[in-house]
Image 1 (cartoon, rainbow, N blue to C red):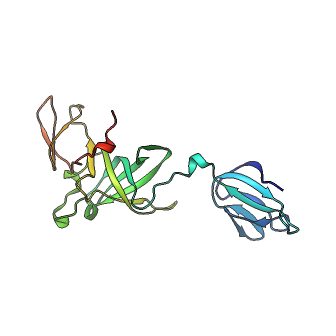
Image 2 (spheres, rainbow, N blue to C red):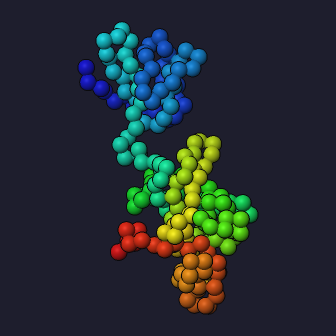
Length: 196
């Protein structure tokens, strides 16, 4: 019998009793009930067994997640002396339907002289940054990101005057209106990341 989508469900939603069905992919059993382990379409499939198999499958469009090694575009939300908190907006050139939280630790900002790095001289809130995913997150924690390559770092930043700044070196950007220089960990942007 072919699979038949029943309805949409969210992660953690109780689907049915283990007496009514068998747990399939995208589900787990707790206290005699089957729960969804992810958001997606609920499917009930009758196989050779007496009980139907209940599974949850993701919508193919919503499957894009940041994975280790992926280059992501993110926006800096806040900084402190140890790390920068960011929201991941794109994986490669594909926009995400929902944002994911990320953290760029002080030691992951540059490849050299890691002990001399100062977060506030690398990023500021609202900067747009290219970074690489070095560790996956989960519901409670953030993705760990790195900008420790020449091609990674700040690609768009605004000055205190609200004007988009121009990179003048690997560690400085300048406001074209006020000519004020500000420190940033500047990315050497590769042609594949430029949108025309």
